[in-house]
Image: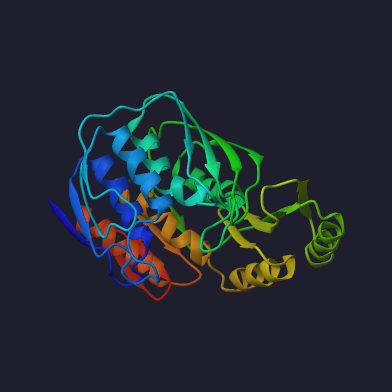
Length: 325
């Protein structure tokens, strides 16, 4: 059984999410201890519990330690049991994006059919990518590896603390993965931006003007809706011929734009948040890949460490270049 120290480097929930996904896909049992030890409230929270329980259901897994506050989990995957449709309520504003970080690869790699999920939770919350980032940036970048993009329908946005966002996603099987070389971005195409807010027309109008004034050739989508909790979210993606860069903010369009321009000026093909999210797919591809990222964060190094606990030494990191060998 693979032993995982949940306090390694960044020491957050990502270690658990990656471990569960790889355990299910590779059919390798693991034990994780010191879960989220470096966080103010260590152990499993509701959103981690929901993802772990659903993953266990997908693999008929034997699991120990699945309860709120647990700092140790043992996970033994068995045979696959993937449904055609499932509704999952994460509860409050637990991140739908982070739930998908665990569940999407399990279904995409193991299922031989289209699977539809209806997920209730938070679409734009602190310390997690927005669901718009997942749609506009993450899944668009995964297309370069040969992965068919899931269909995402954001029925309702959900902000902290009550959540209540509703997202439907149709997941297609991954048939074959291609290695990628994403070193230099080529030929800018356009910007795509999305703004969502709780019934605040004046705020949305002002934020939209900032985007239109700062960015040329931008496709802008605005949602002004009644959500359970008041909130604001903006996501901006910069589309190139061979990559997509992204930025999001729960504060202002100006912050999102400044962060995106910083990423563009780094001459990288992937922003620092996409860097760690693409690793599991590079790792499971038989072909070699090489990517240049904006920054090697502790999240990225943590994810590399976790992946290599399951697959052995497969990554080389130098400066802002990550090579899967």
